[in-house]
Amino acid sequence: MKLKTVSVDLEAFRLMRREKGARESYGDVVRRIFAERTAGNYDPSEHLKELFAEFGGAGVLTKAGRARVCARKSASPRSPRPSRAV
Image (cartoon, rainbow, N blue to C red):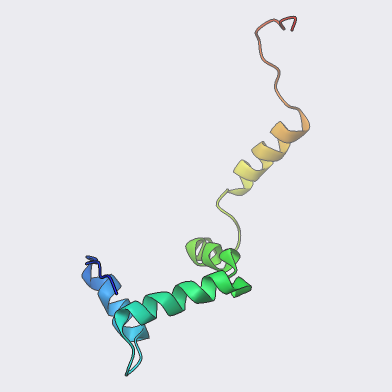
């Protein structure tokens, strides 16, 4: 079996150590976690929920920002440049 050396920061090492079983290597931990993701039961939306949890489910835009986006969708601005024949 070929080996590669991987450097991780201390926080990543602590996370791996927390996931590691009694008779499991760190390579086994990485394989197990990635196998769970590729097995089809990994939902990337769960990761997005973690990333945007600080917004409390309200999205990243303010009410004014959402209104501005909705207004731009309904009345798309035209380019001031004259159209060209194709």
